[in-house]
Image 1 (cartoon, one colour):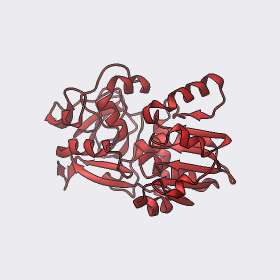
Image 2 (cartoon, rainbow, N blue to C red; image 1 turned 45 degrees about the vertical axis):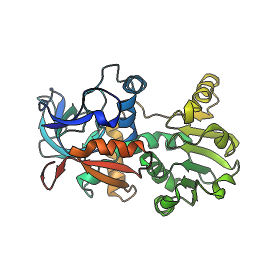
Image 3 (tube, rainbow, N blue to C red; image 1 turned 90 degrees about the vertical axis):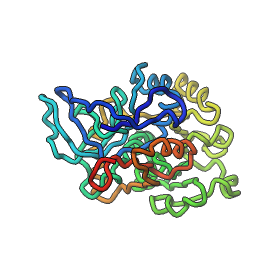
Length: 327
């Protein structure tokens, strides 16, 4: 089978599509024939800083030869003790970091992890959207948004930001989305009450009016966020920020328990429940996938280069099966 293989870690140039042995599922695993996967910021982070990323995620020190979290595909075979899925089931979800990932024609994963039957109203290339949503959901839940609250999402056009907007949309809070000018209409369509171009004076003129601020791209910086938050406001981030500026504030918030700087994470073992719930929201029209562009598996190194620019909108798809045949 073909797989995006990493012989050494570093720049996107080290990612090569090679022939590797097809995996065999263990007793409680399923073998997925991948139709689509993605390249996201987590993949780029693991490519550049594998030891740090795997320690933070709890995946251990061993490095993987194939990355890839998001997947959509078909169950090929199941292990002898697996019972939740059967061959032919259309599935989607998140591949864990304990084994090789989904940037391949086939991969194995435990059937009790973050895998579910695919939303019936999506194509495979539209269903690789779980990673950003999985990070955004616990943040919005932690905020506990209510009518009267004011939320600002900085970088609201990425995978995490577009998901955060949609999770926050129906909670009664007033949502301000800060994005590049070309994304203003997109974020309005996803639920932003106010959309602001980060490069304009309108952003500079915002004052400390927000109960909650989410930096969904790790680019806001401490001086600017201090000008946005109310005295008892809460700031959440998905990264350590420019030059790791957020690190001492996150550490102090943890030591003192003041809850002002937070990185809310999903509870361990909650992945399967989450992807099932997300599927139901998609089928009900309450969550819309935002797809930037698609690359064939053979051009996955170019996809990594594009994601590393920080300019992507929503999700960058890798088409593993095109036209009914493996890419």
